Image (cartoon, rainbow, N blue to C red; front, side, top):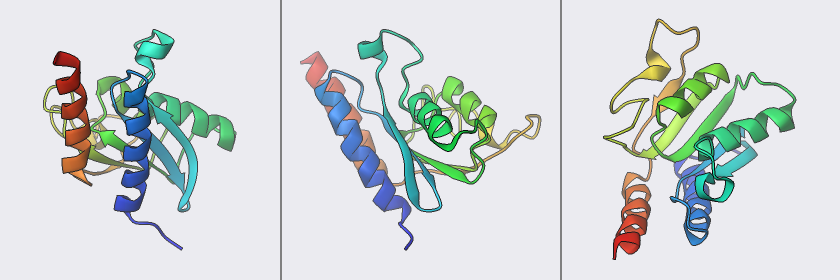
Length: 151
C-alpha cells in the first residue's frame, strides 16, 4: 500500500495543530521510509528554549535513532513549511532523499524560495524537492496562529 503526498501532509498538519496548542509555531515534520512512518517532529523552540528546536531537526534525530544510522537514504521528509537554511543543511547532512513541503517561506525558505540548497551541485548530496502540497491549509494554520498572537 502506498500513501500519497497529501496523505502524509495531512498527518503533518494534524501534528502542527498540536504544536500550536502548546504555544509553538505550528510546524511539523514526518520522516517516511518505504511508505511507513519512521518519526515525527514538531516545533519545540519555546518549550526547549533552543533555536535548534525546529520540527525537521527533531524528526531527523528521531529517525536516525530509530533506524540506527545518520544516513537517511531512501527517506522522505514531509514538512508543513519550507525548511530554513539550518534545516536544509541538516537535510543534506542526513542524506535525505526527498523533501515535500506545504507552505512557501518567502523570508526564510532554503529549498526553493530564497535558496535551493537541496539542488546545489557544489554540495556533496542533493535531494528531490516537491513544493505546495496542501499549501493553502499549511499557510492558513501559520497565519491563523500569528493572527491570534497579535490580537
